[in-house]
Length: 86
Length: 335
Image (cartoon, rainbow over all chains, first blue to last red; front, side, top):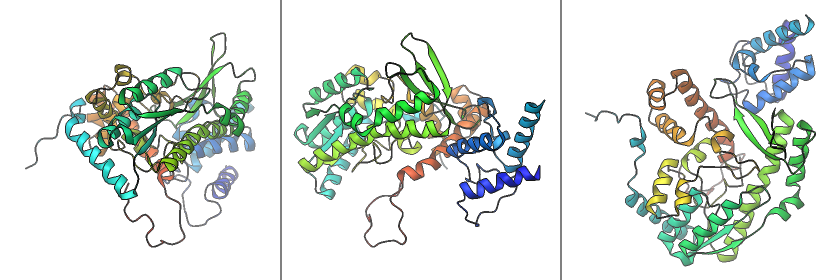
């Protein structure tokens, strides 16, 4: 799980923060509230989840509960992979 | 002791049309003098915003100092062109018709857009009609766009727009607004006129415009007015009935598309009230009661207004500079 979180964090740092080290965020902080993500950013994140873990995000799953924090994204990825493997 | 707050409803948007017309006319004259321009150019879509702006300009400057541009292209409705001409003729202004399709074709607007659509709907041909629809925000989800397409047999197809195709379709269709503005500035330079931008308050506030497209202008005479108020002025100024009753469209895609479908969470009358409520610190509970929606939905609408304002900052922003430069835009009022 912490591997997934780390990979997500690295992607956010590289893609949205452009490597700048001036923004600290906890695993449970809202990325939308911190303006690290906006609605276009969510589409980029979804593409990343698809390319990295083969996760397909359905329309109904595009909600903050699944995508708005490092922890939420990692949990979401775990659940999707578990369902796919079942 | 302040008076009790006006109940949240259509009355809060009531407008003194006589006073407002005079105020905007004074603004137009003062702005032209400040910029040393002799008249105004504006695009006429046949929609209520540009029609009202044209009528206000004629009221302020006289018909001889107003030049209209009708700029149809492949996907704009023929109604917009004929209504635009009707407004220009009624106001007695000089105008030109410029068909943008050849230039848009040359610059690759249709080709880039069609390529992105075909990536999602392989059977798509230019004979199909398409539009984009926004989804998610009202339900408390994250805003995203869907592609809606109608094949020649009338069947409707929907597909969620992934990142690449979404950005490419928007970028390609943005050519339309930018090319129109290019023509407006050509005629403005030729005539020593200023360019009018026609956004209403909802569009201006919520970033419903293309950067350096319809967002570009020398003056915006109705950007402070709610859409409801623009319609009130249309009636007051005696514009054609069809203009006074037309629903706001984007006139950008070949399938007729309401602005609320494309961008806003609610129909425009309700968005006006929601924006007014936001600007006057009214509660979600009050908004919910006024609109007949749940408090949770009202909260989502108010939050969505903030989210769109955030995106609009980029659209409104002047070029970023490393350090302030003396005399850089000293007279512009704060947005």
